[in-house]
Amino acid sequence: MAADKNNIKIHVNELYKSFGHLEVLKGVSTDICEGEVVCIIGPSGSGKSTFLRCLNRLEVITGGDIVVDGFKVNDKKLDINKFRENIGMVFQHFNLFANMNVIENLMLAPVDLKKATKEEAKKRAMELLETVGLSEKAESYPSQLSGGQKQRVAIARALAMNPDIMLFDEPTSALDPEMVGEVLAVMKELALNGMTMVVVTHEMGFAREVADRVLFMDGGVILEEGTPEEIFNSPKHPRTIDFLNKVL
Amino acid sequence: MIRIIETYGSMLTTAMGQTLLLALWGLLFGCILGIVFGLMSVVDNKASKAVSLVYVNLIRGVPMIVLAYFIYFGIPLLWNSILNFDELLGTKLVLSPLQAGTICLALNCGAYMSEIIRAGIQSIDPGQMEAARSLGLSYWRSMFRVVLPQAIRNMIPSIVNQFIITLKDTSILSVIGFPELVNTAKNVVASTFLSFQTWGIVAVMYLVIILALQQVAKLLERRLNRGR
Image (tube, rainbow over all chains, first blue to last red; front, side, top):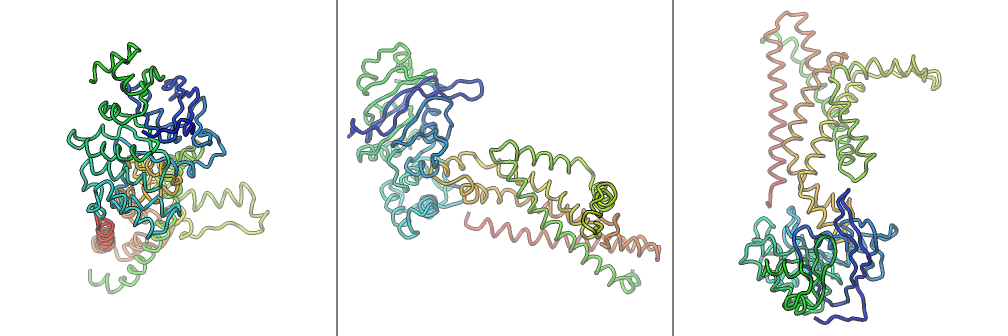
């Protein structure tokens, strides 16, 4: 929304990734600016989730370069844990820590990594729960929450580390339709506040409304990219047209 | 029956003490081995996985009675007569039945514990580890703060089961002359010929220990499940 074109946050150049003999990413290049919201759309198996997971090295890349904030992701000397502190990630299946209640989920990383004292972390956690509308669930365990609530907690947990970048891996795909809205609302709020976001999604409405740029991926490459208007109103590549016809 | 208890009661309770002592040592070292090899089998390192696999398969593939004979008689022979390390160090290697029994029991218990721990960790959704890592926690921090607390909860019934099996396995070590319950009972039967009574008493003694162990485990499990 307020993308700063002069400040490139994530630089991806000729990214390749294989799982054994299966080549999933075949030369992906793009730059993502500070404050930019990028939505990645495309059919299943197109490599969008793998691409996202490469950005914080949950997947080790096979070739090419990713530079985030000046740090090369595949550099052997990189302190990967330090690096990841600055990149929040939200997963399709929430992955809340089942052995901890909501507030403990939010406090674990800041306290364990000495980013904050217990009191500071608790205060910040309560503020974050307030913003995602779940203050009254602080003492609940993940198993007691609905899908939408879990995902909002997961977003708050990622934000507790005050990251510069947030990655979303199909954050609403595992939700009941009626719960999608509450999660998207939180994400939209984040986007409006200038967070750099990379969102793999099937929510075309969200992409159209919130994204600064939409990437269409298929077969391990970015086939087409542009503003939401360009992609949704006048797609050029036949695969994009075909895909959008099916999902819209 | 009364006569046996009067005459041999203290002998049998001493033997029970010896059984418990051996089981305790075996379980202690067995747990340590199990944790070490269990963790070695889940980390992302081919060499450590292979070492763990070899250990587990080797121990699982050899009956404990063979292992007991091998450690008690075989290892000192290898050390003293085949490798001649005794000349080198100036002392002969001699293992007491308790030492050999503990090693044997621990190796055996460790192999099965290792499998329990591996399975317990692998039963936890990999997403838990990924989420912790994505926040910047290291592998081991994620393991100890997120994965293991959940895994241990799932492992407890199997661990208790293994404890019971190890406790009963101490009876196998009667073959190397360790004065535990079965060995002692054999001597009692040899001098009294009262097989029914003696073995009946021994069976009840095992039963009591194991039921008590189960009760402790139940309490522990309830404690761990509090707040869930």
